[in-house]
Image (cartoon, rainbow, N blue to C red; front, side):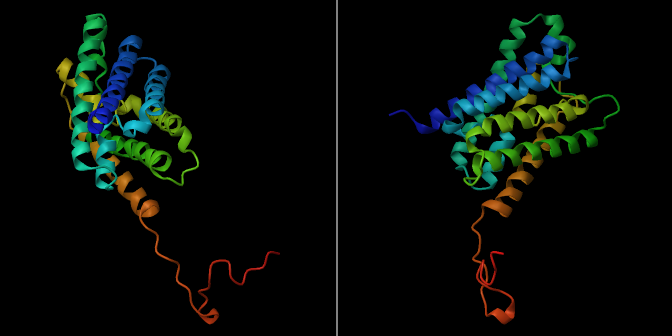
Length: 245
């Protein structure tokens, strides 16, 4: 029998591979100068892949997302580790393949799509931007894909892809808006570019953890029964004493 962990991990591998190959590839293809094309490329590839294999692995493709699910106790630790191995391995192989297929001069000009800080952006500012952008991303993932009450479960991939697109529109010029340690790691490793690399590991992990824990605590944890008391206390049965006027 095929291992369920292997099946799920391979789905994560394919999704993460596609993200780095298409996302970083769009930066190489445009010389990093077409923010709209880059934002849409990242958003579309995630929307497509999350829709394609979300029912298999959850469509994380991002170590920060997996960390959020682990902290919220919505994924087993063994599976989380398998996901991380698949995500980082896919990122490395995708970057290697991209490096071998595109002209060297084009790849070198944009550091193979590795994220970097924009002019005038400090490491601290970049860290804060990555935290906020990743918070938005993981918040939307929990709201659309993890929350069984979500009205938009069937289009979760589209909502997640749109979130990545809008995040890149804002953060692209300042940090590259990676929001994903694996997205940063592949091009950084292959291109050997490590300047301020910690920003794209610490920022997404913090943002993802905060979003997952906040959504879990506010909306997904078991809800306590509403208190009920005599009318004079002002605490009544839900709907009691209300007219339909």
